[in-house]
Picture 1 (cartoon, rainbow over the protein chains, first blue to last red):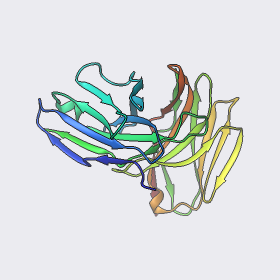
Picture 2 (picture 1 turned 135 degrees about the horizontal axis):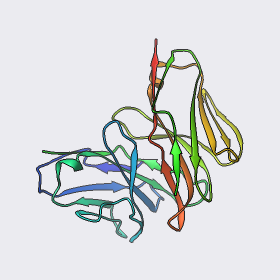
Picture 3 (picture 1 turned 180 degrees about the vertical axis):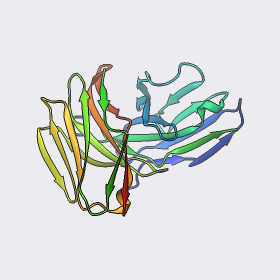
Length: 115
Length: 112
């Protein structure tokens, strides 16, 4: 059973470009969460999605950031017109449900560097 | 909202025991998780507590007291590879669903 997959693992962008980060949840998981982590800091929640629905985007900046989880295919976190402050590790996690015992399992992350 | 507090850093000696504490405040508490994160890697799940008491899993144990809003992770027979950050995460009612919120993590350094 493959784990959570993320690609690319490393992404370099120049200021003003767009970054697209992909996340394929574990098989059978329909809940996806995106987190951002700056060096030496904790995980910051960004957005929680179920298939075709955004459930909670309270942690995602209103400008330039968007997320989707289509019926078919991976979840995408999109950052438009990137700035140096967007440089961070972006982790995706998935869970089968939102039940009391459901654990989030993390992908390996995408390290975004903005030049 | 949810508030989680854990020490920023700890140092312990190889072969010893270390206890990492976590205190939390949340509404509608519905479980507490511990994750391990090595530098540059993804968090990996260690343990889950929803009832009071101690859960043991090999060298690692996790304790929960819901009335005190308190948990600890106990690591026995420390090994160098245990050097990592340990994240406490709490599930509680927020935004209309059971949201998991992560603490900032405790960076543990194991020394010879």
